Length: 262
Image (cartoon, rainbow, N blue to C red; front, side):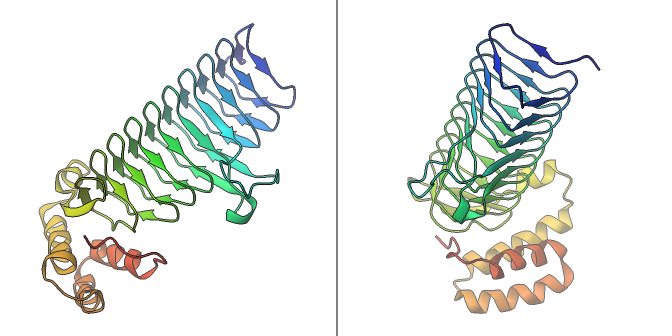
């Protein structure tokens, strides 16, 4: 693969490490302690601040700001990091910040995610794989997002919350509690559970039996009117026959913040 292709107007710190085939667009600034993997393309007017590691074959479109200082008043210049995986698409004006010393020191992004225009990933967040962040969706600090999550436009997640794998957040939803895996959240302002993400599960190869078990678990958790403790007991029984329900129950039992109950 060819050596890095750097536009004459770009500014690249001598300590930055650029892999084979990396492309750096016009007026982009690459700071010290930045590592960019093979085949990654960074468009014009972007900034990448270190310590930041970006994997292979990512596409970062113009005006993105990657690896900036965390937007937290407690940050005092300590060494903190951002790590981004492979094959992510990061569109115009996306911001992804490094971690904080008191919050674990690192922000992480997995593989094959889409971050559409004006999305924001704050300090100490951890984003899984194959997620879609639609325009203007936002994560506050310390949020964990599982694989295959979709955030619709203008959706937002409160700090320290978790969003489970395969969840779907509707347009403009604001989430202030943990969202279980497989769950659709919709509503005005404060989001509420609205069933399972059945269409998304079908597209990802879940068969009818798996989806039926997840639907039954959802009804136990949200429709039956049970106290959470009793719902958890019933889910434990259902989990004996379904790895997906076990996954859902493990998520619930590992949480430190309240569970979204709607």
